[in-house]
Amino acid sequence: MSSTANARAALLLLTALNFLNYIDRNVLFAVQPLIQKEFHLNDEQIGFLTTAFFICYMVAAPLFALLVDGYVGKWMMAAGGLMYEGSLRRWTMAAGALLAGGCSRKWIMAAGAFTWSLATLLSAVTHSYGELLLRHIIVGIGEATFVAISPAFLSDLFPETIRGRVMGFFYMATPVGSALGYIIGGYLGHLYGWRAPFLISALPGLLLAFGVVALREPVRGASDHVADSVERGTLLGLLRNQAYWTITLGAAMMTFAIGGLQVWMPTFLTRIRQVPLDRANAIFGGMTLITGIVATLFGGWLGDRLLQRTPAAYQLLSGVGMALSIPAIVMAVYSSGPVMYPAIFLGEFLLLLNTAPLNAALVNSVSARLRATALAVNIFTIHLLGDAFSPTLIGYISDRSNLKMGLTSMVFAVALSAVVLFYGMRFAPRLEKQQLAVSS
Image (tube, rainbow, N blue to C red; front, side, top):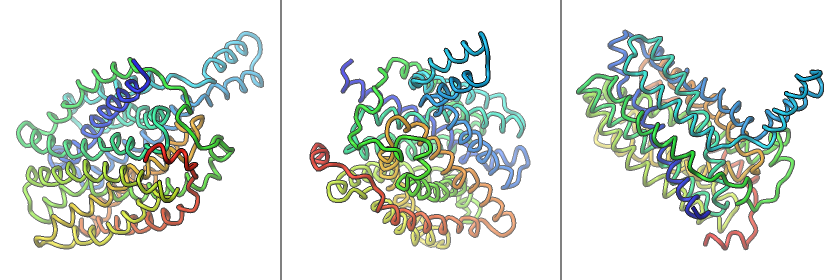
């Protein structure tokens, strides 16, 4: 397989896995009322399923990333030299030396995909809230191995100047998979009960895991053109990397809003607007499907085009998208007339417009030797401050007032995201003119 064919195959395979990942994750939101009815759960308890998933997901991601980037091996060598004697020292040093160059990313991604797909099958034999919670924990750990590593893998196959489009294609799977999660979950859940739709993504995920193993591992940093530095390439330097942290904090607030919207919008339409659950899932799922494809691809393309004019193109586009989404979100929550559905559509479009630019800016803010770890720290941060707790927080507010008040918390998160991203424009890394010309 040629390098170009390998890159395209990797993009297609990893996007397909990401697609199944989000179908599986969003089926829960489509069938929440059915689960609540069977297990007699309140809003806070059902929201905690998503919180538990994200806690395991965001804690596991840095551990796997440190293994992939070789830090675990380096620490083992240091520990072996300082703490052990004799054969134990030799074995520790040898194992550390083997891991210090970084583990094979394709094998770890394949193992993660296999694990979460297998755990999805457990839904067929889940008959208590505790069992359902365990299932979400296992899936969270499995998905952490994939989501932290796959963008770094793709970054070694495609240069900085087209990563907006690459990330647009890859992350298109997020809203499209989410939309199909609503549609499949709403349709099958209505006909066959809430367990049936969880099984849809299990078998394809197992097959695609074997396809990932067939890919050729790219050389790390082969497609990078921005010079390495302490801030871009070391753990200590990452703490001072202002481009990275403004992107991460802006993305965290965006994740808070998107997480709240995805978890609670079908329930909002059913409970507050008296829309039947299967119809609410079909409407919101259809909106997410359209906005996910159009907004994500358009955002990646537009970000790459604007990169010709300013190095801060990705941050600028994302900040504008977040700011413009605020009035649309307010109208979506508080308007019950004919403007409600267009407002939901526009708000979701403007939020998802930022997916590709923010992720392209993120991978460009660090060098290849730190990229998986930086992505994992990003995952930990955006979910810790974002959708790990926004479903529970919105459910908490809803239990004590109403769901409209709970969803209003998204507006404050979106406004803060826009401010942080506009501020972060000054820290964007610069590409040379000849590198920019390649993508024009």
